[in-house]
Amino acid sequence: MEFVSREHFDTYLRGLKYLGQGSQGACYLNTKNNTVYKVFNDYFDEEEAGYTEDFLLRFSDIKNSTFIWPNNVIKVAGTIVGYTMPYKRAKNLCNINPLLVNLDKLEEATIKAEKDVKTLTDNEVRLYDVRYNILYNNGKMYVIDTLEYGNRKVSYEENRMTIDDELMLFLVDNYFEEFVKNDKLLNAMYREFEVRGVDFLKVFRNKLSEYVGKDITKLNEVKHLVRKNNSHIYQRGFDIEGI
Image 1 (cartoon, helix red, strand yellow):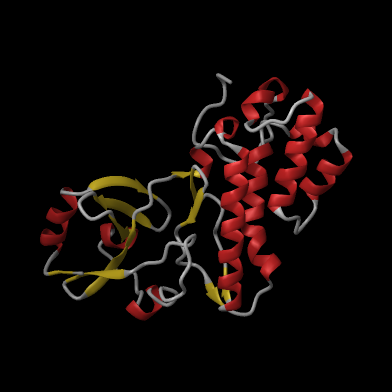
Image 2 (tube, rainbow, N blue to C red; image 1 turned 60 degrees about the vertical axis):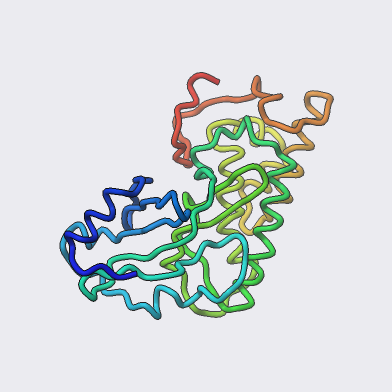
């Protein structure tokens, strides 16, 4: 997609829906075709990002349903200033209240994501910067901001742990750390390197279910066990004061 000048492109952006800004750039949504336009911060600083089309689209042929690749570059006066990607109707995981998530659906989504992690691993793609870039919506998980991914041989476990890490923090951090700490098996799994996130989710759910004497489907059913602390790691996008 090419624009003849900054004025032309800026006018076009004003007609799109602003989604937000991150460390790499700002995102805008064209609601007519469900396309996201990611514009590098360098553009707003009137500098060149230095990316090539081949680099930005290097993984776009790897078919999967979890990792959202760039599908076109954005050029202004011949210079690459960003890229486009398909829009997914989902929220960033860190902006979702874990108490309200159906655990069956979350497990299902994570297992699907694991299959795509295997596909990327088989294609020698190394995952980076996954935390805070996972989107979720009722059984569907997506990963965005794939710009920093590398090309090298990597183990499936090393790649998978980038998702495992955030899944466990999402479920536990600043909510159920005290419960986890007081259970020998859960605490060992939570602290251990390379524990499969789905395995932790299953054990965590079973332990909570045993504690309350019934099978739980949402953490809201055990919200009386929530304990806040001041040493949390996971940065959530909402205040949990009212739980």
